[in-house]
Amino acid sequence: MAGKSAEEQRLEDLVRLRRVRDRIDREYAQPLDVDALARGAGMSSGHLSREFKKAYGEAPYSYLMTRRVERAMALLRLGEMSVTDVCFAVGGSSLGTFSTRFTELVGMSPSVYKREVTEAAAGLPSCVAKRVTRPIRNQEADQAATHLL
Image (cartoon, rainbow, N blue to C red; front, top):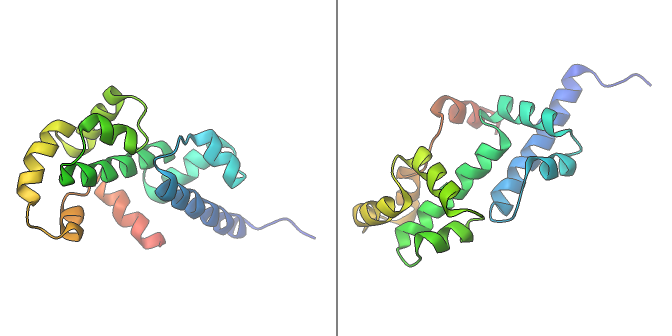
C-alpha cells in the first residue's frame, strides 16, 4: 500500500485544522496552549502553527486571543461586568496581558471600549453590534479563511 499523496495529506491536515479552530471557538475560556491543541490534532506544535497560519492567516494563539477579545467585547457592551471580571471570564490569566492584546486588536483599552462603545451600540440589536465591532487583525487573512469554509 503506497503512502498518502501530498494532496491527501493536505486535505487531512485541513480537516484537523478545522477541528482545532472549532475547539478554540468552543473552549476559548479554557486554558489552551499550542502544545495541547497540537496533541489533540495528532500534529507537532510547529506543524500545527505553520499550517494553521497558512490556512487562517494567523497563528493558533493569535486566533485564540482574537476569540477571547471578541467575546470580551460582547460582555463589555452589556456593561454588567468589570474589565477584570471579563478578563477572567474569557480565559485571561493576566489583566495586563489581556488589556494589551485587547488594545492591539480593538484600538482602545477595555475600559475605554466599555465606556464609549456601550453608549454607541445602545439600541443596536446584538447581532448587528457584534458584526460591526468585530476585531479583524488582518482583513486579507479573514477573506482567505472564508474561502476555506
